[in-house]
Amino acid sequence: MRRSGSGLFAGLFLAVFGALACTFSRDFTVLPHRLQKPLPMGLVNSFNVEEQLQRGYIPEVTEFLASAGGRSLDAVRFDRLSGQVLLERGDFRGAAPRLERALAGTGRASDRAELAWLLSQGAYWDGEFSAAGRWGRVAQREGKPVPDGWLVFLESQGTRAPYGGASAGERLALPVDFGRPNLLRLAVRVNGRAPEEMVLDSGASLSLLTESAAARLGVTFVPGANASAKGLHATDVPMRLGWVDSVRLGEVTLTDVPVGVLPDGTLTFETTSSGVFRLNGVLGAHFMKEFDWRIAYVNRLVQARRLDRRVVRGSKDQNLFFRRMKPMARASLNGQPWSLFLLDTGSEPSMITRGGLLKTRLYETGAAYPVTLEGIGKSRVSWAKISNVTVGVGAYMVRFKDIVLKEEGDGIEDGILGASFLSPFNVEIHFGAMTLVLENPLERHLREVNATSRETAR
Image 1 (cartoon, rainbow, N blue to C red):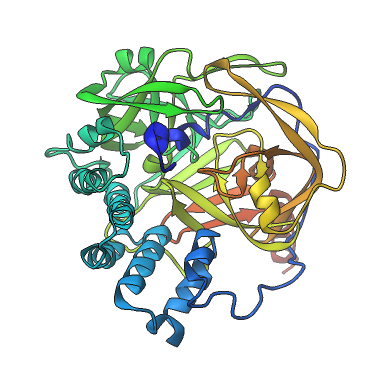
Image 2: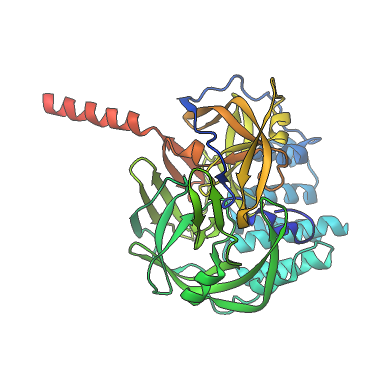
């Protein structure tokens, strides 16, 4: 999230701005993922560990902190770094005592504000909204410009247990619409009402509804819980915050679900390819992290399994991290390791930032041409596009003939993995293991055919 003023909420809508006003990023080639070179030895040391963590080298910083070099750091610095690393890896409860110790040993107000804000984020992700509100107040007192309306909302938790209801292991399978526009839409029942079409949107920090949808569905608003957010067009958008009693997907129901409510028209898009498209709402990352997901774009099917909230997240193969209230995937850019891309199932285009290019020492080799994108409230912005860029995750990489070059990277790090990157694959988002896994559906089909042929031959 941004670090000043109401811009703390600027990232909430990054997923829902992703409609293109022209055909774009759809000419691509899927290739096996190969790195041009490994990361250098000794990438992280005691002099640059904070810088390397900021750059997204989270596994490398984790390894350094476990080494003799990490153990040589003073206690406060070690706790601050290890707490942030655990938070970004998804171990919210493990992060809290480290960050608390660092806060107790830190005197500078700005550093105390940042540590309290990290503690607030960890409690928010862990569903402990009241604790998130208390730490948010500490951050506010130390000078962090946290919007008061957000803290009022966190403090409204009371006896609610966010995302209660469904037991660990419960599964769902739902058909989805995808195409014109290329956003995943599925039927969602809120508070037992008739199904509403919503977008599955990992790039939105919080689930969102329009005012009309909120009125139909019976949102319980929290008095005074008002905030403003910025979208693609960098204009403040008013948002009210509240709760819904239940959200049902397929046969799985979650209770006490937090939502943000935006003015009507905010989630309306108009593009030359799709015409006018109105969203009722989106299911954001805070909702999605309660499940492991499998998205079969070709078969238009979404499956999910409810996670056990007592199990610590993460794995040795982790390539998915939480940063600035959103999930970030570890990716290569033109074969260069490693970058952090916002994982954004709610964006049509994929993008890179100019900062992401500079980070990997990649520069434009030719002219950059403008491309127009559609934002919330039908706003439009023109950025550049560049050609022949390759983005890789896991076993595969995608070479784009053209890709959007976003000027700023605040809140999205080095780029965005949108539908133009994800849709050629079966995508598995494991919020338990914190991994993003891509599977080529054609290769899977061929394996299954060959296996059946061998079995028949016996």
